[in-house]
Length: 154
Ligand code: ADP
Image (tube, rainbow, N blue to C red; front, side, top):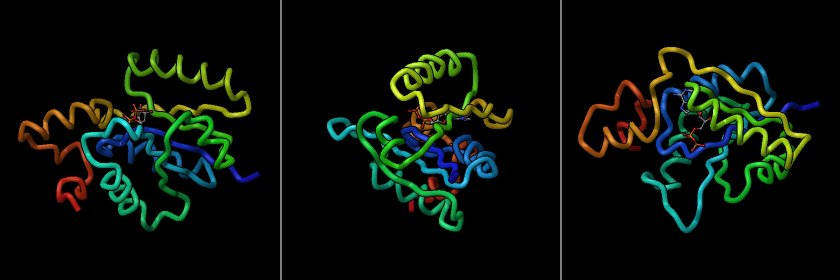
């Protein structure tokens, strides 16, 4: 069986915390699809195109990783891609409480899809895309929280 996992998120922007989770999940799965969830009526802070491009550049040489944008339910995106696993990261008990409800809802909607959690590594546990956006908007230094490509803006 080819083990396919979807790692869903907004990635607005991608952070070192996201990258760490993906790299640590690589040995667990044959394929990881990074799903950039979006809503066509509500744009993110960084454009969808920009978010897709950053992730494609970062994982250019990693054959196991694919990047796709999607709208709608994450379980429908998983089914469409024949993914049996959902991958999520946990930073804190706040994440746990939120993620538990989502994972249990997904389990009741799609019993065949299993959610796997990886704990954030301590060096990245404080990194949060919405805080990164606030620091960035106010001219602060985000270089310890995001990959270089986000800073150079390419
Ligand atoms: P969402 O909008 O679904 O919260 P995010 O892009 O913020 O999407 O996060 C996607 C996934 O990555 C979530 O499972 C989130 O908990 C995880 N994640 C985000 N930041 C970190 C981090 N610093 N360390 C570990 N996991 C993280």
